[in-house]
Length: 311
Image (tube, rainbow, N blue to C red):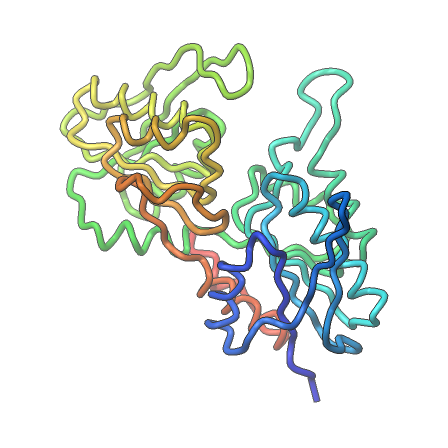
């Protein structure tokens, strides 16, 4: 008989992990973190994991302590004779470093993949990787879940007429096109030029948005420079309203103020990363916990998860 799965969480992702555990139907497992005076820390499972499948839940957003906690938990579970170690990483950090875009730089996403495997992970579960090909960096199974499964339902409930889907850059055109096909709408694309990371030098619009309700689609919002500039541009071009949907609310720097002062009516994100501020009324959070809990059940029971891929 298959043993029940055990769920554990890194410290910074505990709120999301508790939601996932509630939807899964059980409490989080007991784990303690000992901290030394110099900042070093050591996780310790306070219950047996021998022969069990363990789900280790934690997004690897900054600071790097979140990634290190996941690696140490993996190693501890491996050395405690866990049968299967599934790392549930709603937001996969370093995913933007998926290739060498100039000489003498690392491929950070591949390095993280190697570290997780070396630490003992036997399976990875994540959501909306920055680039789909990162799945190929792993030599272990990867369950790549799409936030569209929950975001399109929110979009349907909005009942917007004259709807147009939009991508804030050329790289996101495939994602926006998938939403447009599913919702049977038009699509527009922003073309942006950067001279350095996190700074948009110039932007132009490809397509017509006059008198349309526009929804920008992206995998993450970091400084919010691109998405707010795109919203302002579309309003200038005659759009009736502009909203944005993104999976990961990285929201660094002046992102919250940019969003508050932008032409965006609303930014809908998931809770893969906890918000640093709750005073921006334009930001709405849709929980990914029910989806992760359901997929975790399917994986543990060796059932197909193909019906979880909406678009």
